[in-house]
Length: 145
Image (cartoon, rainbow, N blue to C red):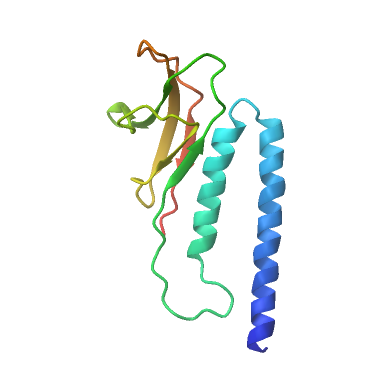
């Protein structure tokens, strides 16, 4: 099997996985509207991290593991807010991850460790500094390698 043939096969596999991922995300968003966006994006990020850590077709050299992170996004609040706080639940309860309120509706947690499970919630913050109740909790499992 020539190099070009291996490349074409690998490209077909990657495109097929990407198409499957797009269909899966659409399904998740349609069936889980209340938590679908946050959960789906976190799971898609995890899936892509796992896929990128696997050696590709025809690769034989050592590959260092990817830096893992969790990308979160959520629907904007229907109330007027100045930002959002992002929390991760741990052994000591909820711990806020952001120093200043997050202005947009996305956040990337780059402090995750391999082989760990994390739980996230967001809370909207109004101009008086009061927080809303927590969003639905999302579980993210980071692969061991």
